[in-house]
Figure 1 (cartoon, rainbow, N blue to C red):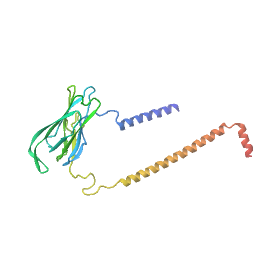
Figure 2: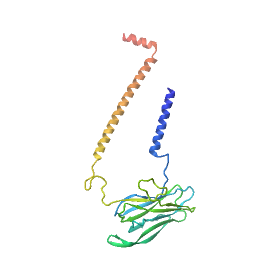
Figure 3: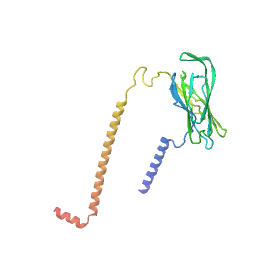
Figure 4: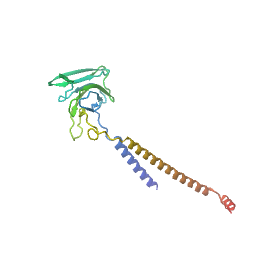
Length: 253
């Protein structure tokens, strides 16, 4: 019996460990990289985005970030927000033909944005920094790939420039990607049809599930009480001496 319990306990521990690894992903942590947040938007919109930069070095700090805007998807307006301890520089390029923004033709668009740390404001090991921008109107393309260069205080440069491969694995040094949906694209259901309401059904299912759970819990508690009561009665009978049992028999007769 002891050997059997140890075997069951070991198997349960192994199963629990496997579930924790699968759910929490402790086995192989993914490497962090420069990304854009949010990573989805709608064509034609203006939006606030942030380039999120983690530091992957154990000893050096990140001192510069260079973001290259895609050449095949020009943006008419690019604004940056102040980042304490960092300076920003914007480089433009000419486009031909010009892009049309709110009825006006624009020939100069932003090609590159560079943030540089001042003093000891770099991104230290084990930390990350966000660099906010306002972009718009977003072009009519499926996605925008922002190639990035991350420079460290020891002179190292990480080139986050690999473009995504449809149907393939994530590249070793992926560039930040902003996925764009067509303006007015419905999220579900046919065009023009209202989305089905499922809140009430979810509430009913939750309520039914809760009721069933409470019923089962009550049944288990009741059975447990009967078992404990029976065990207590049996132990009382077993512990009673001969005199007690004789007295009980006399009073009964």
